[in-house]
Image (cartoon, rainbow, N blue to C red; front, side, top):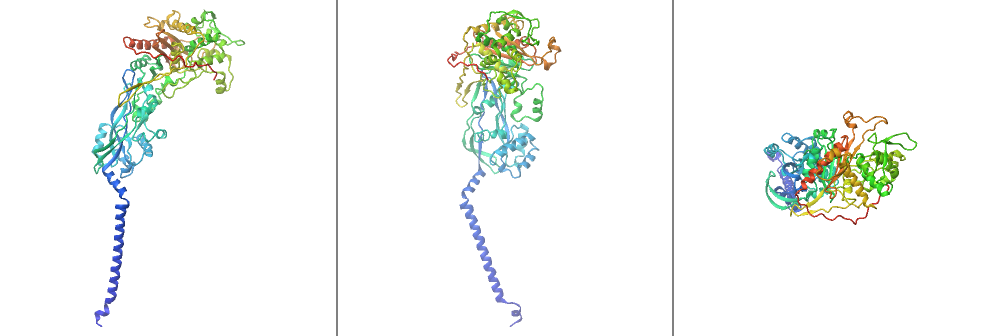
Length: 640
């Protein structure tokens, strides 16, 4: 054996090499097997999935939001339209880093507020991650340019051209038309999410809320081809969206503006109705607000300014304001007394300026401390004698006062097609027992019959009362929708007015008695509104003034001059009216908060509104008037 053989064991090396070769071969075969298995998994088992993913790299399905319907006045003036806008949106699934980090980086080139983030996060929780979620609803041209320059740094972020809502009449029609706002988490829990795919706005108030379903429309979709960076190259397929219906309102835009301006610098409400069909010609609550502020998300600063404004611009006085109607309710009480047969309209009653109840020394005073002397029913309405109606109320009693008030709809919502209407209060024994756990006292009957005490009504309710008297008990439910217009065909479908059940009196002459007295309020030289409303009349008007007390006076204190009373303690001024008397075309209710005298303050405003509307009808052709429904069952007065 040589020295080399003693050092090297060739047999052992061959065996080691063979083992290593076999191990390497086995490992190689295993790796090849794994590779083939992976190829099989990718090419066969997951073929469908990766084919779809590869298509997604080239094609993208987008939701096509419907165009929201427009809102018009009765004469075709736009009250709500759509304007071009750019919207920034994020597809969370396509974002390479975290969404929050992307928002932080975006904020350097596009201002994103805390409110924007909050709304985005709420929407993102309710939206699939593969769909775009809006982060900012209306970009400026400068913000669009900044983003386009830096687009490559923001995968999953894109700008989408769309439309945003605009309200041309602004504060003048804000409380009627309302506004749209961003969809919130609360909204998402109440809506059909499939129908609102890709939508960012929804009606929040007014007509925009009442007719949201008609205005919104239905979404569509489209398939687009994109490049590697996600930029759209061409459209491959489309399922068009269905635009929302456009709405034509009964509102007269010119009259709406004129009525708002007629209030001057005073807070208040004006409601004007067409007695022939119940259409709302004007519905004003002043002050108003800029509806456009809410469309893209109102800032905390602007919202705080509205909420903290002592004049409450967001408060819809016409529908939500519940005020003592004062003497405007006396015609209703007179009709009730006539219908019950408790009074002779020609019999004169002594009015010394006050009345006392048996066993009491308390003086229930007339607004005229010296009294009106001997007066009959007509004179009591013309001069607004409280004492006459105190005595009338003692005969009627609270049960009948409530019954006849309810017959005219007081204490109940009118059912107008606008949201958040309040019902007012038509008090009764049962009402007081239920709400105050107290019995009814005789003195409360006296103040109720002249529209004070617990009794409250909205300006809308008072306009309906005026319309019912004007039409001798035949009237219609107030409404703001006149017609629907199909966006595709342009076809307009009128909305039929809904007749209220007629108020049927046993003697129709009672209507004429009260209407003639309301005519005397304006035309008789001793009528409360003659010097303020009745001079140089252009049209025959019937009306009734009212003043609603905010604070009472001690028994023996003489009422001070208006100028010396603090503003918040001044009486509310009210006036109801209709014209022309024999063929009514308009019924009006005016409320001026803390205005003082109904005749001197609210009366001239009512006349301005009436003259403005009737002037506009001169020479304007009017279509045939549908015959009023006379066969509806009469309403029966009931205790609540």
